[in-house]
Picture (tube, rainbow, N blue to C red):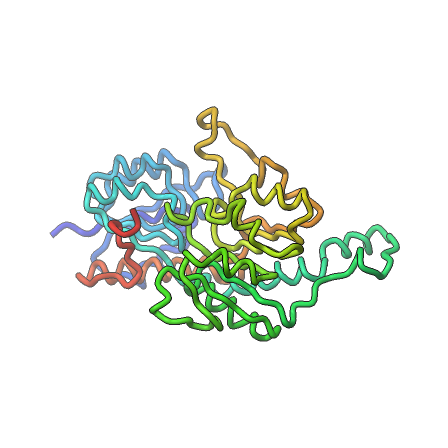
Length: 341
């Protein structure tokens, strides 16, 4: 029987080959792209990925051009080292019978911690006052410069999965009451004080001075936090997004920031203009509405999971999926393509 060929889709894998091989069966063949100074260590040249992908039974890694999967006729498994899967052509994978797994849960702790950091930065106006100190500006004490007391607040958590539950657990340390919005509340409240279905989201938002977004991006969640959702919030509410940028309607958050209805917005995830008109036009900005420049906005560049050792943990999660697949087991982090579509 021919050896299973596994494409490691990042160029640093050449230096990690022995460590990676130690986590896989001995009879696999590893395909590794050559180094290119034009790519970062955890990416690879697209032409190499496409060429090697044609030979691969399994593909492991983070970022791949769509053509890799179009050309990969031998492909049986994609083991993504990412936690999300909205960048994949799920229709194509389903048609070809390709299994998709992710590193779901690998970054839950650092993302939850980052969400709290963003909330504190908003509530206590840390970035604004840090700038004032560096400029040696005088800041008067009073209502105009006052921060927000978190104790006693109510927070709605959109997305009560691993990250949402970890956020809820940490909010309790600040004496914040938590309402989780969950597709199936019957599965339990987890670490939230209450849990409600999406149909009751607006009612929950009307009670909440804080909103924490930890949702994946799919057909149901795209644009879910829209004009109606922001209008339901009480004046001065704080919104933090560590889920996916496109869950929040960009024009809606811009409007409530400009009107002053929203107390602040913080995000580690921003908007995707891949389908913008004209086709292929590149917008090298987090927000075309310049949301990221607003005085009441705090941002980070999709770095919530960027803690020491995270890349290695992602690889380990991805390789665990591969081992389960090769052993004939159902990988625990397999995506149900029918449900995802």
